[in-house]
Image (tube, rainbow, N blue to C red):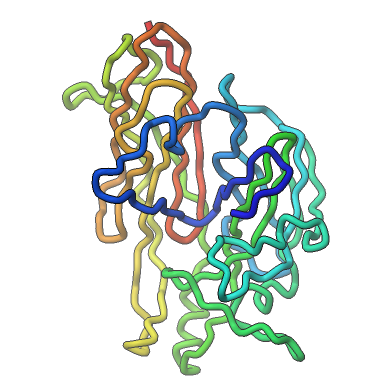
Length: 309
């Protein structure tokens, strides 16, 4: 990610993102892992609704944290980026998105912002081409989706998110386009149903731990949070029914997780995922956060505070 004078630039995506695996024998230390919160950090950006067509109003909010917990209503400036990423660029968004010249500001109130998706989003970031433009149509993500970049600036950071944008189905026969239009439903955000600790097979409230204890944490969601959606398979020239995968990212101010992320793929019907959290060896108050993302860009997050004695 392009570095600016802002203290830290992060990618807090609406869309599901993955961290490249380390080379064999090169397991990173916990201090280098994204699950550790050691200072101000944007953990997630959420849009409501989770998917919107150009011209539709969306409300944006962010999970901003530091070592003292969740930051309530942080000072923030929001904007839609209007700089398409070039084919040769390997970043999630164009480096030009760090420049004010590429940003359309969004009015913000107490840490959130509401604005309309740019009318030309599907030509800038989707499969359409505008007259006279030298941009080629964008390729969809693995779920068939297109995304409009959103930028958030706080006192400490600059972060980017990708808002799933409803665009027309491209390069498909007319009958398939018609069927897709009739059956496709815009994505909605998933919900975190519960955060519990699991002792043997029993689930209980997760509010306390002993020093050095290893706690199995379980994150649950509802069955219908893994939504079905039609996907155009260009090889088969047909619509296929697919189901969203779900992933949880784990964060803590102390102690460590076995996994930074875990979840279920689209073929797995189980509605929870587990991770092992190792409490610190000293008495303390620890803040933990959990961010649930579906594979079409929906986001949910929650927090808990644990007393370690």
